[in-house]
Figure 1 (tube, rainbow, N blue to C red):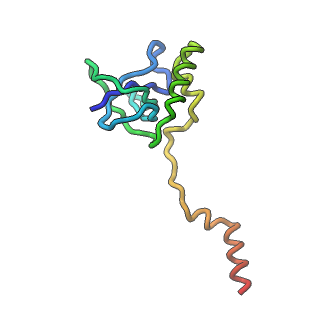
Figure 2 (cartoon, helix red, strand yellow):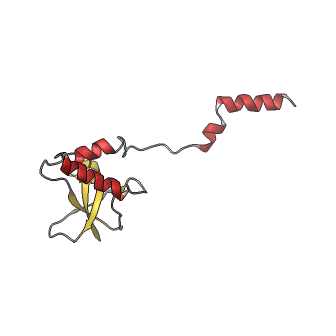
Figure 3 (cartoon, rainbow, N blue to C red):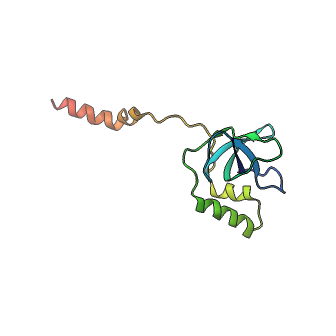
Length: 129
């Protein structure tokens, strides 16, 4: 079991920027994950791995993005939070695009083949024969 400091992208408490969560998987810094805060699901960013705490922790619900954020971006977000004396969640809301946790439909590769423009081209090619 691995334990991580995760920074939610929404303000949960004004006095806490990050919370400890657990995961069976080893996650790199910058991984965008889904976490449960109380009864609410939220997006969070893994900041670092920590030792097993003395208290009970919730598991990370799922990994949202396969590729982690660059470490430089995570460090910049931390610096911005300190420099501008603002909550880290506010910085994440500024840096990251909205809708990270939205479900997207899979791309249909045949959709572009069946476009109107392609149908017209196919018709013109077949009519020349």
